[in-house]
Amino acid sequence: MEWFVADDGWLGRAVLQHALAALYLVAFVAAARQGPALIGSRGLTPAPTFLRRATFAQAPNLFHRWWSDRLFLAVAWTGAALALLTLVGVPARLPLAASMAVWAVLWALYLSIVNVGQLWWSFGWETLLCEVGFLAIFLGNAAVAPPLLVLLLVRWLLFRLEFGAGLIKLRGDRCWRDLTCLHHHHETQPMPGPLSWFFHHLPGPLHKVEVAANHVTQLIVPFGLFLPQPVAGVSAGIMLVTQLWLVASGNFAWLNWLAIVLAASVLPDAVWARLLPGPVQDWLVPTQAGATPYPWVVAVVLLTVLVAVLSWRPVVNLLSPRQAMNASFEPLRLVNTYGAFGSVTKVRHEIVLEGLDTDGVWREYGFRGKPGFPGRWPRQYAPYHLRLDWLMWFAALSHRYAYPWLPRLQRRLLEADPPTLRLLAHDPFDGRRPEAVRAVLHRYRYTTWAELRTTRECWHRRPVGPFGPVVTPDSAEPDWW
Image 1: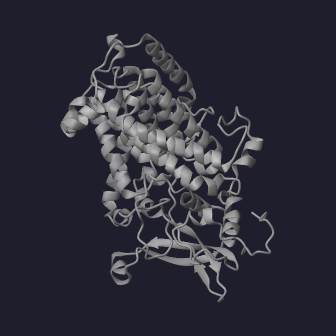
Image 2: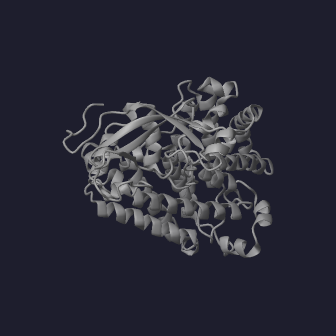
Image 3: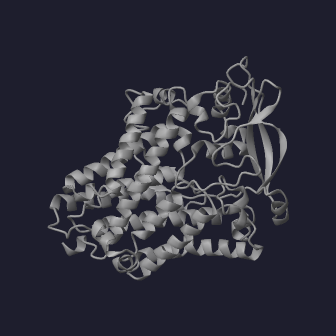
């Protein structure tokens, strides 16, 4: 059974499993905290409405026959609990069948949330988590040797993630080809981080070096993943460093962290042996492998055949001049295509929501992650995903991204709806109902070094105009976008 075993993948597999459990934990907690206000029975896009028109075959999920907000929370918190147990290593010490069952339940629970999450769970990293989670079912426990085929499938996923992102840039905005996209991207990205202002003010030639290095990392380096060690490990290490750079420069939920986890699994055990203290290694790999169960071998081989067959459409998509970003070709999201920022916006617009107080003054609501008050410095939230903040960025690009949820958001603010207010960082009315709620479009830009020293504000903004009509208690249900 030598062909089946990856002798150099013990620590890499363990790092992948524990890190994936940590990201599952973040994802389930985020779903529990945000889901009721976004897709609950009184959410901005209620899941019950979606379930009435979507068949089980179109969106397999645990809520198909019965939805309740309590059931959703039970699913999310059950997933969080299982992820926590996995993080501390409990499934790795269970019998192989039980360990696989835990990973299968984690995958099924999160797939259910994604498949009813509609636009709030439509981001590429949601699908990526589902795909990695499915492969994790077949990675085995601590009592069996790492399966080479599954680790190669992990590399194939990392290849598609990086290469797809590189191709979409090369085929997309011209600024990627002339190496000028980062003159704008750090300022106009959906959710800047605490260091994004400084990245934006790097010299122009360095921005071009960043883009060129990104092209090399995404279009050339991924092919090294399928070469023998140490080339595969060096290739993965380059990707890992590049992803850490992206983590420092913005907030992209767990996209970069999942890419880091995938790349980390490719590093040979000799690298991990130098990086990790002995007790940590003993905790990650508590036992030596016993016999390799033949039913598990059969399952891994069948998985490999399945992924090979399902890879056909993602490969065709990669080769197509009309390449789609972040697309799933089947409802279980087993093998997908990825890519991001085929185009880069050059001007930043933000929607500012304001409520009218009894004294006639419009007061601004504050969001957790997206730019708002000019003096509020961006926070680091990734890998946590602030779904409302991200959708607010898309809404500012076009009204079509904002209907019907933004008018409903204004109405929920008008009602001082507690679950909705918990999505925000600042309620200027302290739970009271405003007289009216309006959305105003603003033009944002980073301040200069001189402006920062003078005003201590990282943003400069000016109003552009109203973004839809004012919503009052007498307003009809919005149907005007």
